[in-house]
Amino acid sequence: MLVQIRELTKLYSHGEIQVTALDRISLDIAGGEFVALMGPSGSGKSTLLHIIAGIDRPTSGDCHVRDINVADLTETQLAEWRNHHVGFVFQTFNLIPVLTAYENVELPLLLTSLTGRERRQHVEAALELVGLGDRMRHLPRQLSGGQEQRVAIARALVTDPTLIVADEPTGNLDAHSAQEVLGLLQTLNRQAGKTIIMVTHDPKAAAFAQRTIHLEKGQLLNGNGQHP
Amino acid sequence: MTIPGFILRNAFRNKRRLILTILSVALSLFLFTTLRTALDLMTDPPTTDTAALRLAVRHKVSLANVLPEKYQYRIERVPGVAVCSKFTWFGGIYQDISKSNFAQFGVDADRILKIFSEMAVPPEQERAFIQERTACLVGYKLMERFGWKLGDRITLQGTAWGCDLDLTIRAAYRGQGIDETLVFFHHEYFNEAMNNLGLVGTFWLKTENAEVIPSVIAEIDKAFANSDAETKTETERAFQLEFVSMMGNVRLFLGSILVAIVFAMLLVTASTMSMAIRERSREISILKAIGFDSRQIFGLILAEAFGLAMAGGALGCFGAKFFFSHLDIYKMSQGFIPMFPISTETIALGLLVAGLLGVVSSLVPAYSTLKTTVVAGLKELD
Ligand SMILES: Nc1ncnc2c1ncn2[C@@H]1O[C@H](COP(=O)(O)OP(=O)(O)O)[C@@H](O)[C@H]1O
Ligand SMILES: [Mg+2]
Image 1 (spheres, rainbow over the protein chains, first blue to last red):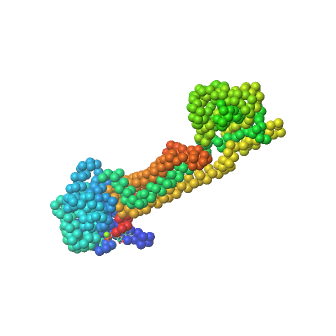
Image 2: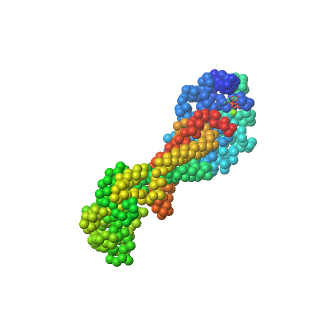
Image 3: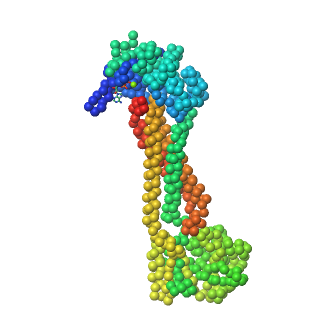
């Protein structure tokens, strides 16, 4: 299993009140899967995604990605781990506004030991893949919402990560752009074998995934967490 | 793109803020270097600013009355007196009375340049002037006026004093703030020509510092009170005395302004940096998400703040240097401030202050972004 989650719990406390964002979740995700995390607002989808992606820590339980317990890493190790293993696509404001599409995609590669020429090859290939080979020199504000999300996807895959995580990537897009972005994720999964975990509350978006996992009040519905 | 390129892009993202910040740091450092130079000049006046330390001792009755030569020993013994020279107006005629509207003085050749250190004389000429009894030291303007050269001999016919002086020009001076049409010769030579009369017009002296001036004046005049020739000691520029005695307070005042400026700069740059970084908290979370660790983020912020402060600092410090070197401060201040040299040391200190400023002002925003978790940062705009 690429991702193995066992008894994962996340609590938030506001003084007296405790919120259980995730309640003893166990879940497996195999390499090459395209999983949709669905559920109503506040059900813990983002929290789960953040813990898998190593930007948040569980209160208890384990989350192994490729046999590494993400919770065991220090902050610095975690940052490096994310750089190697995770590509992020958020709902909005994914890109650095002062950098061009090309430079935004190049950003995670600046932390690697690749040469300038290698970086260029990777960035151009990624932008070609998302269909924006002709928009490399554009700034985010010169792009449409759908194009921005595609640049974010290019940035997420440019390091060839183990996982691509997307939190409501189409939440702010019109139907047509949403279709494009979801189609792109599906292609990446089917043709390039990328493992993708996508949070959404839209059933139409979830339909692009191979598997849908339902969350409610921090718990998995109908035990679909364990792999069939 | 490279990391430095990314830092530059961040710095230039808001050009108006960039320019205003750099200008405010630059202006502050301009003030800083200027005030510090002023402080320097007060604490340790440059050699040309010694006028304020000079005193003249004359006969209490009038300038026409003379003093005994031996007073010099007593004057030199007064605490605070650094160096003292005889200074006797000769009033001789050179060739023709119509040409002779320049002053000549008998002085102690080995001391006069210590007292009037504004007079610039090449060292070998100074030595030649001191060594030869009949040598004289002449201002450049007078040299030019008469077409004199070193080695020329001139004769001054005595009028007030009953002797003539045959002099050889051995040295010429340029003097900021000093009349360049004077002739100085050995008092000893004059005294011999007067058959060892032992009389002196005035004594000029330089005190060790400005603070002792009042006591030096009082003590000299007290020493010769109730003698045949009572003295009156005064500063070269009486109006400057007041200024100089106030110096202690002025120094404190300037010093506090300096501290206030540095502090104000710190607040300005720190708040600019904080604003700049707060605006970017979401972006910083994205950077963290894609793998930048805390140290690298801190590096980005630090480099930007440091670069900004150094740009402003360099502009201010070198701007001040350029400004004051292209300004005829001597003329503008009507001789009150002979020169205003911004020293390398002051520039270095200014740049150091700017650098520290950059570092310190990046600490607050850096600390707050480091404390913010990725998730919290992402939520900010969601
Ligand atoms: N930083 C936080 N502090 C307190 N409670 C939080 C925090 N983040 C999330 N929560 C709570 O945890 C629960 C799950 O949130 P989240 O994972 O964002 O849900 P979803 O993405 O499904 O809308 C919600 O009840 C939310 O209010
Ligand atoms: Mg969410």
